[in-house]
Image (cartoon, rainbow, N blue to C red):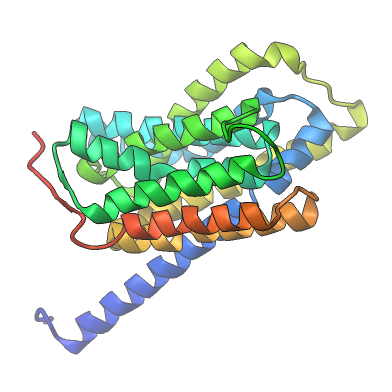
Length: 311
């Protein structure tokens, strides 16, 4: 028989927390490299937003058995929880398309401009008290992203390309979704990811219909197999497997630690884009990126809010 506080239970908890930490760190790092296979697929298929649509459809199909097995729990789940999860999938689709249209480092940093949105949501929507740490996070984030958008350009530091605007929108959607997920979600990781990818399919279809006319699907016959392989790889690994692991790990760790470990995506994404895609990343953008990361760390500091009960 195990008693609370016994050594075996303590060791088990430590192992689970360690595995969850490694999972979050790995998921962040691999999503920092997500742009590589995505752009490779885009070069082969030249399909624009239809590229992401194909990827998330396959991911959703991979997760159908888990959704079916957990259908009773999903039917009984809080509707706000399911909507939050689906909105999370939609935000990742917007982010995925942003990587096709914009500079990788800029898009990733715009996505991680969540302290501003999450603070506004916490204060205005959830009626949580907000500490000065979070207002400091807003200032750091705004200054950082201003330097990133300024980069090597002159003029007012505002989003310039479709990719920039999509990156900004994806961060806003994720701030809303992640707040709802944290407050409401109690379903299991794989079935949650099924709903996540289902929401992604809906948003991917909408973006493909809105933007796809500019990028008709063009795949040379001798590249069909290669295009299919990349689609299965991205949908199976990044969307189906990694996000399921991510949803499991977030249930085992406090949100503050999750937020810090996920910053591995910013570091890996910015460095890989500079080294492998020859995207500009000078000292000004470096300082801006550091401030955005600092904003994320400030946002996770303890004592930043007092939560009220949500009905």
